[in-house]
Image (tube, rainbow, N blue to C red; front, side, top):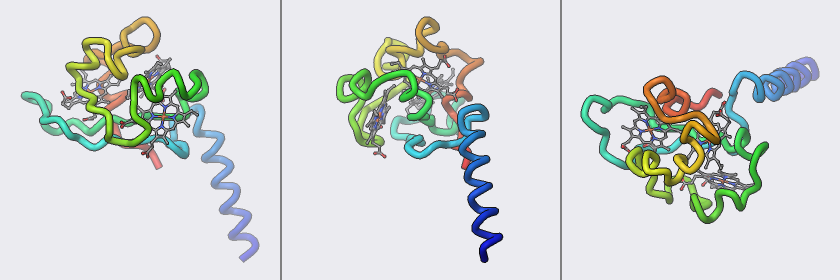
Length: 115
Ligand code: HEC
Ligand code: HEC
Ligand code: HEC
C-alpha cells in the first residue's frame, strides 16, 4: 500500500515537472468542441486546445476575461475567420505577439490534450 502511494506521488511529481517543458496538460487546460462546420478539406482536423497555464504565466486574467473570452468553455463563438481578422486568439496569434496562424502551426492548436 505504502509503496504504491509513494510511487503514485512520484509519477505526479514527474508529470508536474514535465508539464512546463513537454506540454502535458495542466489543470485548467481546455479542449474545445467543434461547433462551426469544418471547411472544405479539413473535415477531420482535431478541435483546438487552449492551454490556460501557458497563457496564465504571461497574462493576468483580465487580459482575456471578459473582453476576449467568456469564462465558460464553449461560450465564445471562435472561428478561423474571426481569428484571421485579429479577434479572439488572433488578438495575439498574429506573428507579432505569439506564433501566427499558418499551415506550419495548425497542429500547435489543433491536437489532443496530453494526459
Ligand atoms: C490568454 C487568454 C486567457 C487568460 C490570460 C485567462 N484565460 Fe481563462 N479562458 C480563456 C479561454 C480562451 C477560455 C475558453 C472560453 C470559451 O470557450 O468561450 C477560458 C475559460 C476559462 C474558464 C472556464 C473553464 C471551463 O471549463 O468552463 C475559467 C473559469 C477561466 N477561464 C478562468 C480564468 C482565470 C481565473 C484566469 C486568470 C488566473 C484566466 N482564466 C486567464 C482564456 C484565458
Ligand atoms: C492559435 C490557435 C489556432 C491555430 C494556429 C489554428 N487554429 Fe483553427 N481553430 C482554433 C480555435 C480556437 C477554433 C475554434 C474551436 C474549434 O472548432 O476547434 C478553431 C476552429 C477551426 C476550424 C473549425 C471551422 C472554423 O473555420 O472555425 C477549422 C476547420 C480549423 N480551425 C482549421 C485550422 C487550420 C487548417 C489551421 C492552420 C492553417 C488552423 N485551424 C490554425 C485555433 C487555431
Ligand atoms: C493575450 C495574448 C494571447 C491570446 C489572446 C491567446 N494566446 Fe496563445 N499564446 C500567447 C503567447 C504569448 C504564447 C507563447 C509564445 C508563442 O508560443 O508564440 C502562446 C502560446 C500558445 C500555444 C502554445 C503552447 C505551448 O505548449 O507551447 C497554444 C497552443 C496557444 N497559445 C493557443 C491559443 C488559442 C487556441 C487561443 C485562443 C482560444 C490563444 N492561444 C489566445 C498569447 C496569446
